[in-house]
Length: 488
Image 1 (cartoon, rainbow, N blue to C red):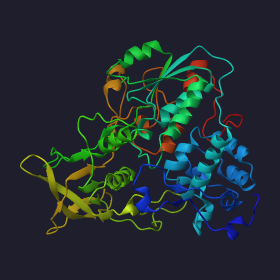
Image 2: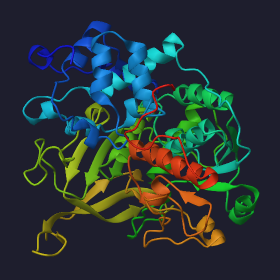
Image 3: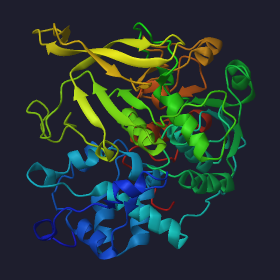
């Protein structure tokens, strides 16, 4: 590495946030960029560790020490080439990925890990600013047609890779604009949508066709699509939301988190003709679910002007330190406090919602909870037990259910005769990503279940290799960790 002693000389730094009282007034991103000198210093913290375990932590196999070193040396264009060789969309992961690479960083064994995600974001933003990211059209077209169903990160990655191989790629998206949950799910304050649009402009210039407002399985039958294309990639995501089947769940004011978040994305985009407005303004809001989606609901509620925001999590509060049974370099289930949590939400752990309470008009007015504990039984899954005498009534006019997803919609699988698992994920082997129907492939959450954005991009890239090999007999597209240095 260029700075052998960098990790001894410089402390970890990341981008600061704008003050809470300022950032909750709008839906803009609120990170404060770091000076170039500080970014170079952060790159210098990357150790000459011999075996870079960050590679194993990253589902994409990003060449992390290589681009860190390039940043330290001020070779930003080289860093951009290295980064894009394994990651089609670092501007997405640099904002949204939980950075499993940092948990696997060797320096993180006894010090703060290298701020890899922050460096990644600044590399790609510099590349866009300098005009280094341009459309790379294939030299030769194969004449083969590929349909990609779903325009989230898995679908977009598969589409770009297949287009690079020379195939004619059409992406079908049921929403009015491409992006999947990146556009209609992730709040604008975490990623403004012009970040998606500038990348889509590059993809369209490269020759990819986007057809929006088409719900495959409903507007067009999946088997018809399969007949019209030489191969089909299913990357529609795990979109079936987990429900909370308790008394009062049908009250006005009990809302699925994704309905709340996606409507607000559209509202920020200028859409106003909603059949039913879902807003947290002047309401006591309770977000049920302690993951990223719950955090997104918290930040959005504060920007609506909620009276109060509470967050319920059925699991016990984790420690801030790495648990003993989750040693380095594995991903630890530690307590994570997001920027939205810091905006004023009160968090409650080991708490279960028992029933919702409504008024005479059918509107939510409160809910009842009980404290719970998890009983560990050797050889069995932990058992949930309610603690007697802990029932409590809470005032609440808006309850947001951020409970995750249970699988993907079944219409495509049924029309094509695809095999699925018990959670309705489409069965497709990691060996070739092909389903039981020849020429039909699956990638992303629709194949592996609800997961991370970085896994979605990885899945899309891997699937593209196998589609290309299926169509042409061989493929020059890179697999995980191989990279493709000539391209940005």
